[in-house]
Image (tube, rainbow, N blue to C red; front, side, top):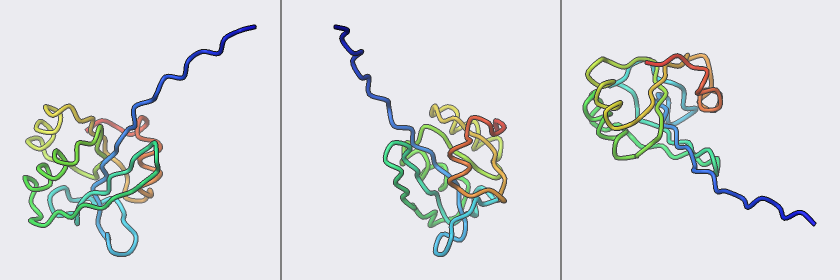
Length: 115
């Protein structure tokens, strides 16, 4: 009788998506610092949590992203200073299209161009 291989737990991937229209239907925001906030999508549970970008500046958005501790970020645009900061924090950054849903962007993350 063969013993089954032990199941190895998969680390949950957390994706942050910069969004606008957070009150109705969150969509990818084309402006990094001016977005409403981020939606954190947990790949394992499928949960989505919105976190507001209260100050609406690139620095405050970087602070928000770093505090949320995502593995990766999808944005419509990101400046060089912010890109360097998030990469230094170990976050994979990709650029997405505002015509795609945030679920699509999270699901096809690996196919998106690197920022």
